[in-house]
Length: 134
Length: 302
Image (cartoon, rainbow over all chains, first blue to last red; front, side, top):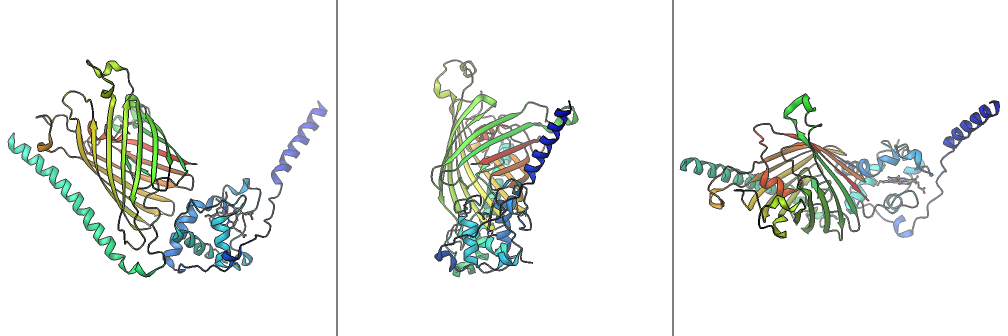
């Protein structure tokens, strides 16, 4: 009986531990030069931010969270931390770089070229990402 | 008797005219508001998200799946709410259900198959988007054509004497014209034609109907929508002298929630047939009598 109790304790501890395993931090992105120098053709105004919010709430919120902190309902099941959009480090990236990360993606960050077919919507969501800046 | 008929006709025509009239006016209004957008870089881009999905309550919309995308549809209609708590507003009453699968062959062309419980309807359908509205309104509307063929697969005894396979077939075709006014508001107008090879006694074989549908976003992922369907019960087009079997109009309204992979619609409706030709030709539930039921549509994209 005693060994059984110890076994149970160890089992619980192990399961508990496996849930606390940290998400891996994202490695730096390699962004093609053509995207790096890409300019945002969409004015950063109220209309485009509103449009971007619609796109974000539909496609991105589930992982990146309402405030862009990387804490959406699906985030816990991701192996990679989706990033903190409010950080100065994130906001320091150019629009072209954010465009590449947001629309082309890699690994667990999905590709959105098909799901967000409109160029205007694609850039609108970049404008919305800028509103997370602290 | 005669005057009654004329009145009825006049009423139908005026409904028809006011619906079309309203749509045309709104269209002109909408496009005139946007003329100054011509200069921007996105002017000739197609607009996005006129409707959340290709289905809105009981009607098709101008939207189609992406190329290579599958859509699984689950459509459910509870019984009429009329019995109140007795069957918890129709939830425990007999219900109707449809399961369907659509596939986007190209950005503009979709095909699909579905199965409806009532009348064991096997349905094949297709939709082609002929025009897509542009950001600058250089093309002011999106236009799609939709058609389906439904096969009633009940036992052949229900078709009576002289059974032929063709008795099982019915068709529905529709022209869909939609305008997106802005990110929050879209309207769609859709004349349709329904044909049944074999109908119940004294029920017409052909029916022209009009549908008007619209949706308004209330938050980035939630919208309110309505849909109105008016079968044209016009005497000059009548196959039989009696108007006893005339189908009733339908009003649906509800809320829609759209995410990247799912669309949920919960609504009230008069229609219980799910397959459009069944609704158009056979609906006996009256808006005025409060013959509503609760329905929901779930769509999964993959």
